[in-house]
Length: 455
Ligand code: FUB
Image 1 (cartoon, protein in one colour):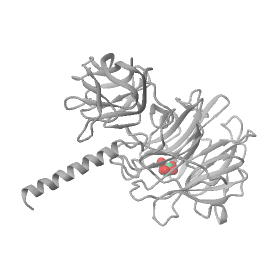
Image 2: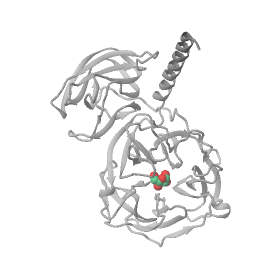
Image 3: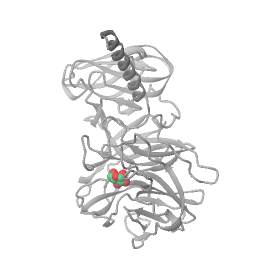
Image 4: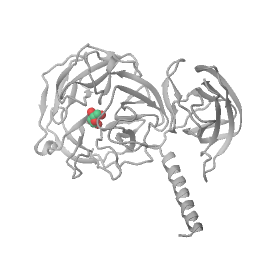
């Protein structure tokens, strides 16, 4: 190839990469990008949707490294607020390792979080965390495992209309036990649910998700009977009662080409008149079977109550409602982000940290009903600081051009947790827009970001 041809070829690759980067950046799945999360357990309370997520430590490979559980909330399905660590292995003094998949239920004016942890070998105990608030922190309700046994993982708990409470769990066998109304003692022995014949067609492996809809009981689960050895898809069975007989319903979410996680694990919830299917992939950068990421899709049950196939998408669920920029918004309320993390904030809750040159946060569907004139943010920096460039509709990067409506200078505040409110003027912010905070500065960490609002 001649030099000019090589240059043209390289330029076309660069343009393709920019286009591809744009696509990746502006997707809404996975719903959390500041860390690796898995095994989503959605839960609705008082008009808010909470997603309780397992947490894969950064840089994990070879086997799971999971020490705590995280919670994120939303009211519009696309902007998710990081509520921090809600429980960890340290919450349960008897636990050793493996903070795996759990589920939260509400009863007796309390929130109960059922979580499995490894005791030794294949022995797992299921702990019960309890809290007065959905965002925790959860404490150990009984100081010991509620039940323990070989493969007792992935508990799913459901309180029926008649007050009876059921817990199912297990890999590769499905176990069940009834709970008393106190939710912290068992009302039966643990028994095994047969998964042979027409019930589960021998396809049950793990990750049960149990609930009732219109008189029909659903058991969604992860399966490996799909011709792609070692890779999980999501299937389900239904039953007229919690005790069976179960009838196999089929595959809901097949293994997809490019899905980098060998596990999948689902949770289903109805919210604001819609049905949502949560699952995980390995789709974040450096993602894998041990660095997974939570996604969500909108779906509709078929008229006969069966569940349609729900493919994995990068688009995710559509936004419902808009975000009000004139009330304080936590900086960790994010639709999509690149190159930032979150941490415990000295002013309470969580703040965005590890902000570097060219990292950014996208907040979707922000309703500037009134012309915004100024922007205020709570920021902290123990370095030279930097700038927040505020764009509407798009970042300005490569060939993509957004509208720059203001720039906030962030000085050193004398400490990484020394919070100062800083303001700047805003021009031409009116109507509903996607909002981008692009962070600009020198090399290294620039500053931390706690909350923002427009005036
Ligand atoms: O996250 C650890 C384990 O991987 C879960 O308990 C399983 O469901 C699988 O997702």
